[in-house]
Length: 92
Length: 342
Image (cartoon, rainbow over all chains, first blue to last red; front, side, top):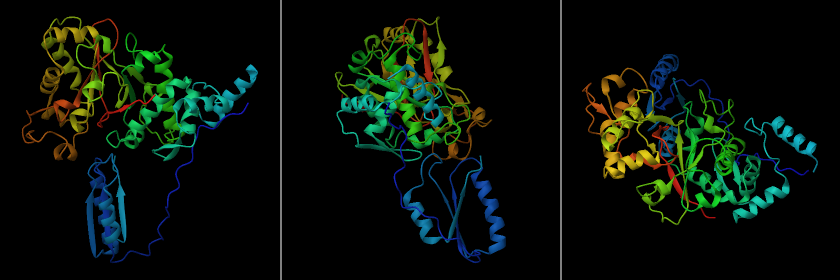
């Protein structure tokens, strides 16, 4: 009996991992709050730990409009253009 | 084909993790081809990239899942229209499939296709017993898992899940509807057929054998709609009330229109801000932009409505005899209606 497979492959995407960061002393850091409960608390604590260790030259704080939808592409472009790295997280 | 071959095929699909836990119809090449032909499209036509995995949903892949679900070939246009509707950004399919919340896509059919396919709209409308309801809903759910990748427990990490993740498909009882049916309200012609998709919790029963007028009846409905644990009081979105024919007749006998019903429910299905602050989803977002602008955030007695606007309360008529209606709380997104091109 010839049977068909019901599963599908994902569309190919141009994705690759960024190169590992060197020790990020004095760089511009970004923090993206997805607005889930406690995400801001978690990110603030992470930023404090990292700031104390690496003395960033600047820090960008941005928030998604709402946690259940993807971030605005313009927001991601801004973070990519201005930051050497970005931390995002949920705190549920 | 011998019976033991069929059983072997069913077991093979279990072993591959391609079922919903129930046996599936083995999707033979011939059956899938027939299903594709009935869609009026070509096998390799790409219908969508289905989240969360982004699987390529070609007509042939969808047809394979429809065969497995037990669909007849004539159901295929409904399955395709439902998937297309779910990919509208207002539905937020990725969010629905990846949420810990208990909602899942519900399909609501309107128009001549309801009779043509024998879709149940009356007694036991949310229950078993009708092939069209059972298999159209199941085909969509299998597609979301097998093509979209929303595998229960792996990618779909809903806290409780939902019995409707096996199948969740109803039709509106237009013959018993004293108002215009949903698809006409949304700009379609009565002779057109549509599918509406809505991320719904399970039906919450509203038992009301006592009210003989619209105001009393809807007061009971409103009370069932305003519960602290639902998403609506915090996030808004769209919610649905399904009136039974008897309840709809009682309301219509009071000369209340759908607009009147919405206005009343919007005004009365509320909870005070002081109670919302006890928990639920109360937080920065509810204080920011998800409530109507007129809400006084500093007033603990302010009454919070279940949606931002009365128009976000959708009204359906379905079910059989009996003095029950149901409330379908949602996830916080919106329903989407699409024409079925058969």
